[in-house]
Amino acid sequence: MTQSKTATIDDLARVAEHGKAELIDGAIVSMSPTGFLPNYVAGEIYASLRDYARRTRSGYAIGDNAGFIVDLPHRTSFSPDAAFYIGKSTGMRFLEGAPVFAVEVRSEHDYGRSAEREMAEKRADYFAAGTLVVWDVDILSDDIVRVYRAETPTTPTVYRRGEQAEAEPAVPGWSIAVDDLFPYYTSAE
Image (cartoon, rainbow, N blue to C red; front, side, top):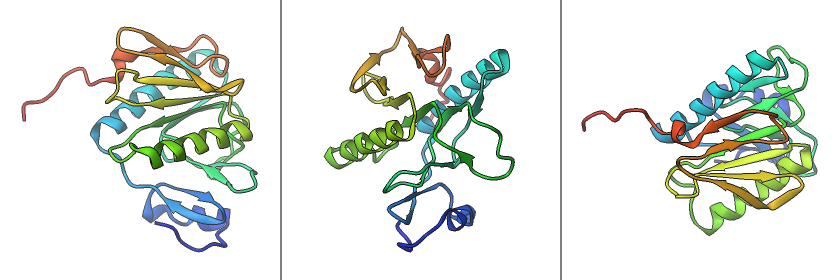
């Protein structure tokens, strides 16, 4: 759902009761909540990044729904599903600048031509804002983690089950087993 065409960062900060949103072309663009699997995957990536951040003290692991303020001609913010950030702490305010690593986990409605175009445009925006690596995580595909890099933005490295996915050069030495992105048990239905 899109709101006012003259929205500001302060307006974006006040949409907390409406959930996740980004500021694009001067409009607040709301994002729907995700289901179990996309949220689980984002959480596993965040937890692994958090362990890496604590061990290396080289940045901050950022979970879902954080706002990153950027200065692009048509985009003022991002809200990735997980991220790694090397900027300064901004306290209670949105983070300043793009994360070095952003994760976008596909939700139920992130499929089809329109969704593919929108995801490609968002990756281009991430790279224009300074992000080094963007993951497109698709748990319904055999190509589960597609790693896009700023220097080769249209040619992803693909990781499947049984492999370790990485985010070089954004998060040096970090990786996560693709198998770890899936629930370790399933409950009876």
